[in-house]
Figure 1 (cartoon, rainbow, N blue to C red):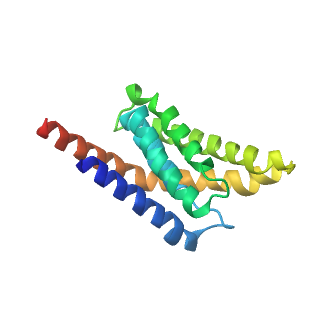
Figure 2: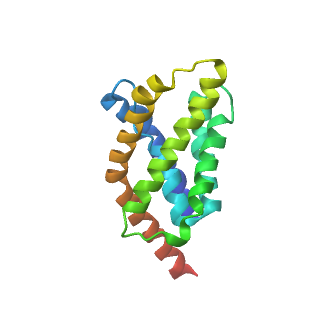
Length: 168
């Protein structure tokens, strides 16, 4: 129960941080995707089920506040949480290379899904412009944010796992 409450608070404060504070340091309207970092991190730390649950909560928040079609971002984040859950068996908390790689790939997948379903299907074919002005800056910002946030997520997850082991 404690894990669910703390995880909900992490998602809520990550969303607030992404939508308010990070808008002041945006570059051309691009901000790091904190919710994607949270979703991917809990996906490869805790597995597919928790990755999908975190992705669902993150996606619902984005859909409610920013989505044009309800459920689009929810599906994206659930997919990212699910796919990152496959890497639970090779995850080591001390190693930063795998999480950086997975979060980078997750960001690319997320941006490509958004491009395909929000722009390409409506006849906007300027992929080069979209890649240089939106995808690339968002990837760089998300990687930099991962370097700052990831260790805190790992410490929090280890603390929660320690509490769960003591209670079991």
